[in-house]
Length: 143
Image (cartoon, rainbow, N blue to C red; front, side, top):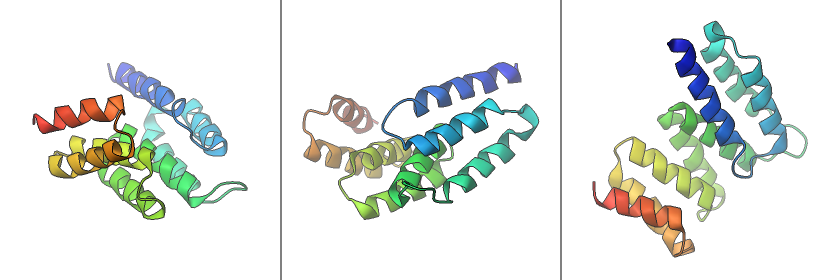
């Protein structure tokens, strides 16, 4: 049974990394770590991977690292770490729609609905026709 849960997590991670504009170097590293998966060492590998993203590579910026780590932590359910990375990413650009989306979703998952709503409303100020933000905003408002 645990094997199938882990398989589901890995499938979810695979879907998550093929989506959005994640730095190609980081995406390659993520895939490499997932492919070398060993159930006994999963947490160690996840931590090793996160540590490796902190080492800059040619053509990589701190924003790319924060974007990648924030999404990775979110997908893994590490909401405190995701929140820290996404908040730091917003220090570079307060209108970063990627960071606002994932931070709003992270706040929602943590039960921090007012904070979630603030990020979702900011997304809607940037793009009033953002279908995802409209639906998410409605969901949070009805909590």
